[in-house]
Image 1: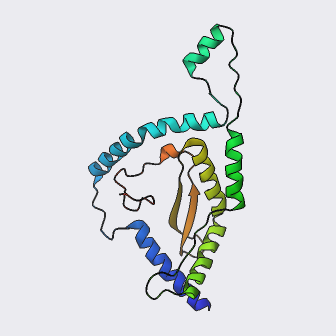
Image 2: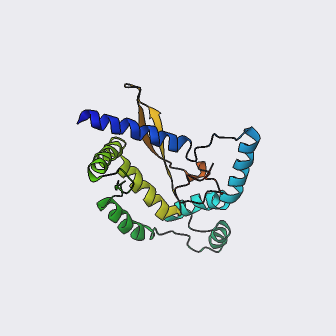
Image 3: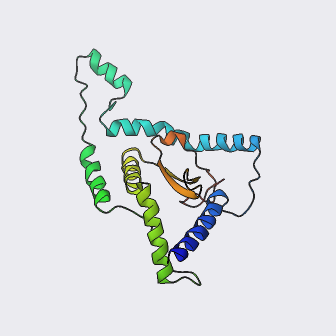
Length: 195
């Protein structure tokens, strides 16, 4: 049984590594100028979202809920500029539902040669990867951040394990979405069609 699991794991990580590094099967053909051009295009496309991101996040935590000019006008006229964090009452129920029913990856046998036992083994491998990387916390944090700021991201990468030197998956929650530039040409929600 262990040999079967290792064979599936080796084949699975090989396939996934190829998909992650090169989802289209083509060799990357971007030189430095093209990368800079793509970054500028992404900055133009995502610029407004990035600018609004921190404003929304601070507002949802009860910080800077007044626009600066309105705040100064109210202060000069002796009026109150208190803030009340009422957004949390809408975020908490959503977060609690996600925590009670955390998302996860499921494997279903749908292609030729696939069967329920192989899918069950792969599901176990995926659950182990998620468990080792505390993926549930990352999923939950990302969904809560999306509820607060309108957008969020996490990264799944294939890295080399320090001890075994085997490729392993590493989940990483990206705390500041302003560090993320998704290819505007990507046509799928999972962004594999992007560069």
